[in-house]
Amino acid sequence: MEATKIKVSTTINTDIEKVWNFWTNPEYITQWNFATDSWHCPEAKVNLQVGGKYYTRMEAKDGSFGFDFEAVYNEIKKNDTITYTMTDGRKATTRFETEHQKTKVTTVFDAESSNPIALQRDGWQAILNNFKKFTETH
Image (cartoon, rainbow, N blue to C red):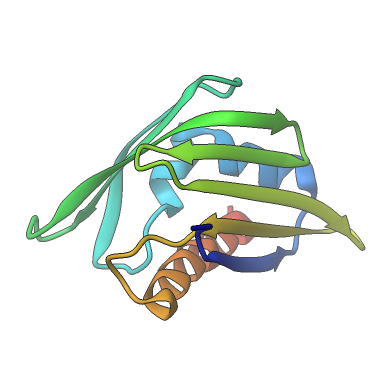
């Protein structure tokens, strides 16, 4: 059975080079990769090449919960596309498109079966919104 696809997107008021850099650089990922201010991303590792690993640690700031997010890159086209496979076999693709001196970022990912679709979409969208806010203010 094919996985349900979920799509999230945002348009960021800056150029694609900056967006790509902030999306792929662990120094920046730790500053935006969380859905709410009560969470944080204390660690990120990126080996940005096909077959390379992506790793982030996401935790509640109060220490009550946390998890590791890991994936292996399948496709990388600078300033265009990143596709990876998560450790549970689900795939995600993020596309970067220039639109009138702005950058549209769209991620399509396979849903998992533990949480409702709306919750998954809202969580990934919140992280993307946080990325937009961080990128536009730095």
